[in-house]
Length: 293
Image 1 (tube, rainbow, N blue to C red):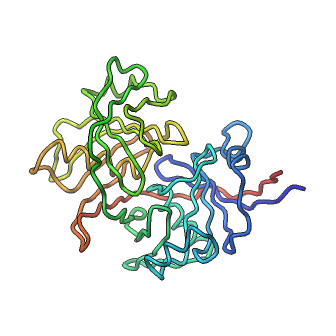
Image 2 (image 1 turned 135 degrees about the vertical axis):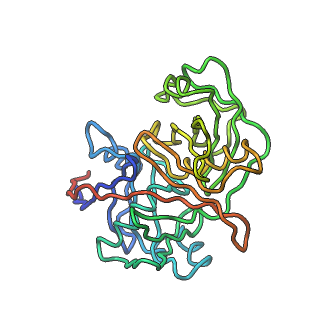
Image 3 (image 1 turned 180 degrees about the vertical axis):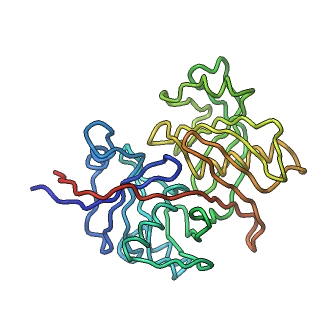
């Protein structure tokens, strides 16, 4: 017996998602169903699926409510391969717009929408051109990871950055190297992180800083989704890594160019340490109905 799924297709700088509302937490999709929906030939096509569910109605939401009782809504995010993910920086902006358009939440300019995720509670606000999210405290991982990517002739050192989900950032020499890398193949990490990691390849602009804003280009292979046109948390990780390499004079404002557009990253102090914020567009593309086995 099939089920009917009302969904919305959304995207943020080309990072695309299928979203559906399940406030009571009664429509859990299986990994097989998620893979079928995200398939770009036989399904809707997406980098992941986001279920809008009230935090009180799923086990993962309990920790979000314990962290902040205002986190009524939980972003139940799943990669295209059917595996769950801790966070998605582009996805949470699109999710916020989805909640607002569906009449499930309100967000006026100057107000904050509190959203639960597996990576912790996140605050979202409106901007003039989209939405911004406080990704919370970030962490520099210990040690060095060697990264082997197809069409890069030698292994490159990568810097581990965690912004609620794990990343390994690799600096390349120039745009020729960046364009040559074949990210249809999964980059190999040594040592391999226990839970895997997103891998960002980064090239700085010349000059690196203009009017106090750092500028970089980035491509990404997302754990569980493959190469995507954009990765919000990856853009934040790439900016943090570049600032780390550039030294103490580097700025706290960054513009990250990805194949799907441009994202803003900002580092700022908070009571519990330095936070990193992400800003960019969030678009809802179309609505539809799916029949799922």
